[in-house]
Length: 331
Picture 1 (tube, helix red, strand yellow):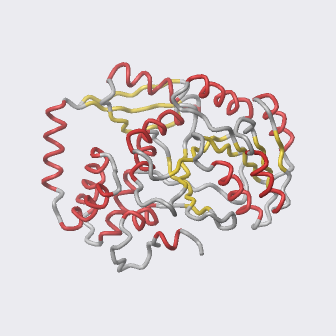
Picture 2 (cartoon, rainbow, N blue to C red; picture 1 turned 120 degrees about the vertical axis):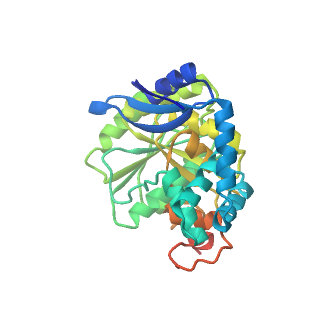
């Protein structure tokens, strides 16, 4: 195995260095902030094809325990990419846990990071970003409602002046919540609005225009918004899409600074392979999920146990510690 680390000012530049030297088959082993908090450091690995195939065969053979096979079948059913399936199944086998749900949860803990968004306060605004039609404006309303119901001072800004009716839709919800909605146009306007929110609110959410992740001009505009206002970008991605394309989307938005993924439409889809592929390719941390059309109680934090229950909804949970998808979606 060839292992090498790369340090660059941004995730996009570091990923470019990896792809340029190791190619598209490189595996991202770890990502972290560079020393002093400036830039990022990526450790990547590359295995010869014959070695990779041999390891895959070995893991497949070794992983044929009843628990590992239950998890494998579930992951395949959800459309999880093959390489990720093998990694997670190997983690199940290594963990030697007989309970399927607990084994799956433990494997997910090794394969992904989980970092829920705070509902009480944050030093930087959260900007919800993503492709068009994935529910960013609704997520902003749900997050704002969650914090407002905890008696927090909530600020909401919309920078989406592209989609027809976007501001009107969000305004309808903020008006009900008695939250002021600030409308901005462009990076400089957003910067002024964010500066005006300092000290006034405990937590601030920013709605952004839908961005084509495969169009460089769109990504450059989004980058300008993020950098102008010093916001933390959160990728909003609907479940149920094509895993391969979702992986490319996750990687593209991670390249402009996204570190977390908030999954939507878990109440209307049966497969989670696309959001898992996006988080793996980013790499991105899972934070929250939206599994209800309602604004109140419309989002909840996700962890490995909750995700395991969504992957294995029909598996008896002897421990009674892992909620089902029905429990994720409030009534």
